[in-house]
Image (cartoon, rainbow, N blue to C red; front, side):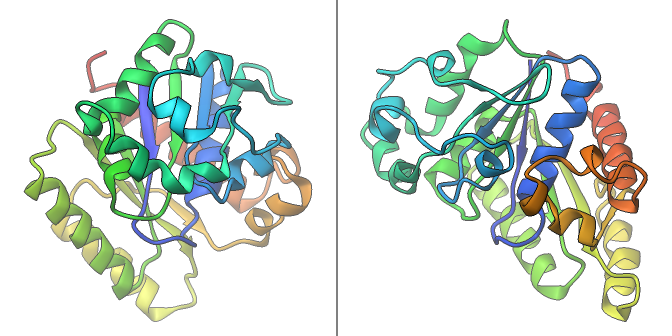
Amino acid sequence: MKIIGIYNIKGGVGKTATAVNLAYLAAKEGHRTLIWDLDPQAAATFYFRVKPKVKGGSKRLVKGKLDLDSLVKATDFANLDILPADFSYRNMDLRLETVSKPTKQLLRLLRPLSRAYDYVFLDCPPSISLVSENIFRAADGLMLPLIPTTLSLRTFDQLLDFLDGHRIGGLELMPFFSMVDRRKRMHLDVMKNLPASHSEVLETRIPYASDVERMGIFRMPVAEYALRGAAAQAYEALWAETKQRLNGIPD
């Protein structure tokens, strides 16, 4: 089982759209796939037409009084399940502080699912917190959607400093450019300069496209209603590149 976190310190960068579309593509290939919506805003849960509710909430979940497999919901797509969000996730940091080894609790919760799923995608809340550190320590790979602006570069540097300061190693970082507008000079300059200093940046660029925005209307992945569009093709390329990176990580 490979665990993939989709994360950024700030919101509004295409994080949830990436999680939903890549999980869909993995499942479409026949892989047993789970997406865990850890964001209390519950956008991924909304896209899959599932009620954002976890019986017992984050308190019982973090305490280990709920098995994750009992909370899993099916989606409308074969091989793709979801662990829905719950508004109580906004207090998950506080819950984690009450357990032993709080930075590894999410990994302990996920381990029993290793025989049930090939891929687990974590749609992460936008912050640096105890929940974030759990995600960093649980994930095999961390995908980082970056809008090509100076502010995104700043948050990327903040994340790298955090990982280094907390001695979090062995995590495959996969930053990529998201919501790209090639008409903007700044976008072009950042996309040219950042890979020169960070070889881990993926080659795929996700465009700023109305097809992605319409996910909220259709409540489904982009390829289900705009298969031939630029956004759907970009997510296909991103998934192919992600798999290539993950293949180098031992199980």
